[in-house]
Image (tube, rainbow, N blue to C red; front, side):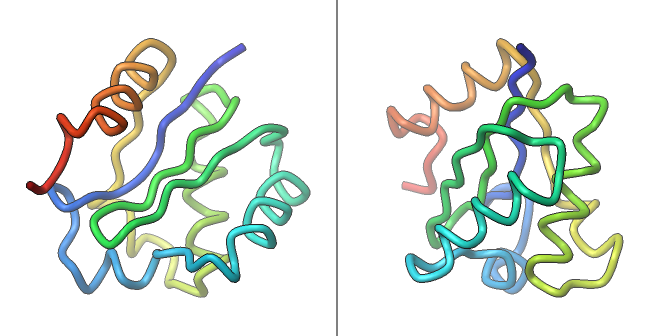
Length: 109
């Protein structure tokens, strides 16, 4: 199983970009359903706050453009808009990143 952490945060993207890819509570269920039905991703979690939007999923990092394309399409953004701001963490780096986020080590504060 390949794990991928994929997203943008306060260190990689300006507020204007982060606001455009945020998921509100009302859209989270439909976003997860759309992600798993329209891409090869079978399992996923989305973390969306005012400072980050991240997708954690079972997917090989070589296929991360699938998630990027889905994110841009879901939010109706131009292709290529997010590319300069995106980070991708595969496998053990994804776990490390997730633990840093969960513990507050990767935080604006």
